[in-house]
Length: 75
Image (cartoon, rainbow, N blue to C red; front, side, top):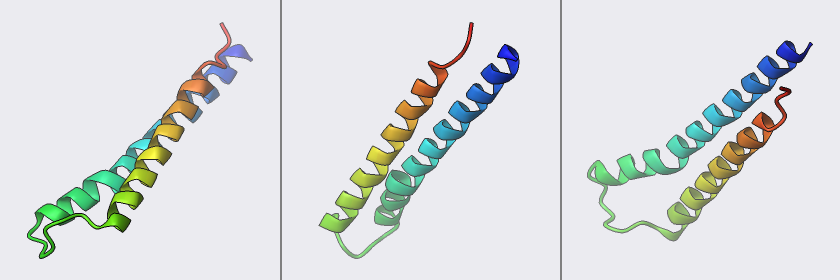
C-alpha cells in the first residue's frame, strides 16, 4: 500500500506543478507577448499588472502546495 500511496502523492504533486506552470503562461507570458506584438499602447496598464501579479501568486501557491504534497511520501 505504501508504493501506491507514494505514486498517488507524486501524481498529485506533478499535477499541481503543471497547473502552476500554466498559471505562469497565462499570467506572464501571454501579456508579455501581446505587449511585444506591436500593441499601440506603450505602457502596461494597472489592471494588466495586477492581473499578472495575481496569476504569478497563484502559480507560487500551487508550486508550494506541490512541494508540501511531496512531504507526505512514506519511506
